[in-house]
Image (cartoon, rainbow, N blue to C red; front, side, top):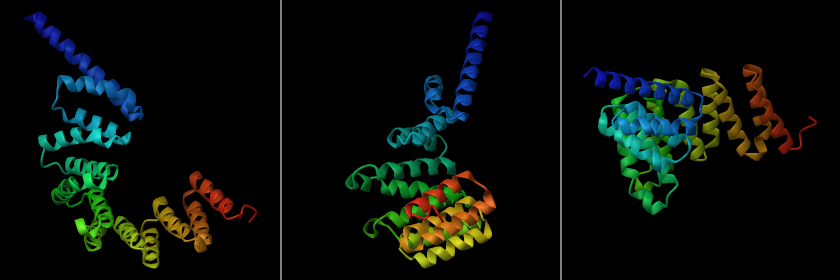
Length: 249
């Protein structure tokens, strides 16, 4: 009996060591090195939610959405009241739908909507889910349930949770709908409220899409650099000048 207990303790210790190693690799973004360790551990405990989440995330980070889906689906089956699980499953289904034929995608759109809406209902403060719904309803053709009105609904919910995200989402909708002046106002409001690097880049990107407004894009990036001193902005400024033969300006 003592021998069996020693063996069990030893096996548990090895599993803990293996998980610690895999977790360390995962945190270092060495996903492909962590993957076989997590998979081996999952064979020992097929319902371990942490292992399922890690493996699903690894596949998603590698843009292997079809392979990620079963891991997230299992998480939803294990905990149907977890908003994050519904978001991961529904969102990954949506990403997979973009990479397959339109006919095949039609068969999973209802599931995408269901799980994203379920996540939103379970967690009234779930920002990522509402962003996904904003984008989904913008991109879907009206004939299969696309709706700018529904996109605005979730953008308004975002504004209640995070005003900056709300204005960015509204800007996204207006830009998608080619209402560029309205999008500009939204992005400027997001800069005014939050002033993050993302807010500046969204406004600059909007200007850059309209060739006649590239100088506004340049000024926006320069303003962002004054605030954030981020080296990536210098690269963007240099590229923009080069693209428009302004390198000497």
